[in-house]
Image (cartoon, rainbow, N blue to C red; front, side, top):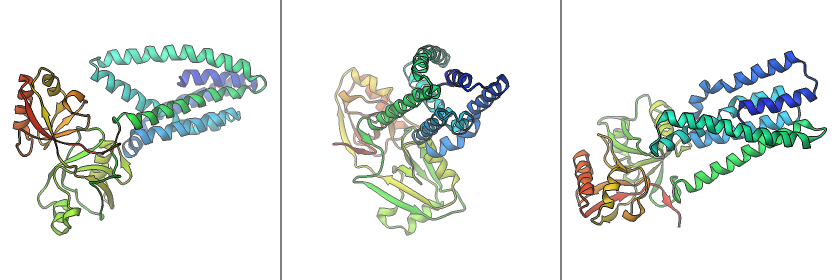
Length: 347
């Protein structure tokens, strides 16, 4: 509801009140278009900060830009919008991802997003007209409307952070979490990473003779990095597995890591047709040491972010045992599994 076309319309009303000439208005519109097209340089920021922190920065920048425009500083307002206008990168990505999970095709999703944008522009234009009529001698007050919408968007984002993980915080604050400092290095860490969980990284292999392997030789038991550990935070970045992996693979300076080695939980899956539905929720990579539960299935005791690490009393759940587990689920047979649940649960 605060996309470029609507914002340009609001700015035009203010420009008319300020007696701007056509040339100045056209130049401002061109500058506004360049600000909207600045998404190419936001990739590194998005990967480093993660989606939520990037979106917070966009919301703050947007509000700052709109408040500048409310002071009739239309040109200065474009500067923070260089970042603020890129907030749609994250929201569009979330919408596309969830719609595809629901079975919609990408083309269909893009079409629906365009329809939604057109409908929102119609609604917000009517609201803008009412706001402009009530602004009287202060036409720039119309920019309070997009500022309020950005604050609403930030409220929704905070709600997603609090509730999207089903009451669990994937951040090291409780039992089983440990903080580890690694010195600067001139070589890769030598970690094989499982990124199936978009919120947490699991270590699935450690190369022999690598930086981490040598670290483990001299480290105390509680400071060792082991296969199966979860990396929940790296140098302040958390909640975004891809961003954490980028830091682990690219940075050569010191690393501050928050790791967790959750205790195993045993879950008994009763016989029944409902088990077949669980087989499609368990994902694995060829080199991974666990199965990842991509969705919750409360009736079977599985939650999103759970990792199945053993089946029927076996040790590690490798590819062969993963296939056997899926076959058992599809047949509806009773099955005992061991799971680990990264993150701290709220009471």
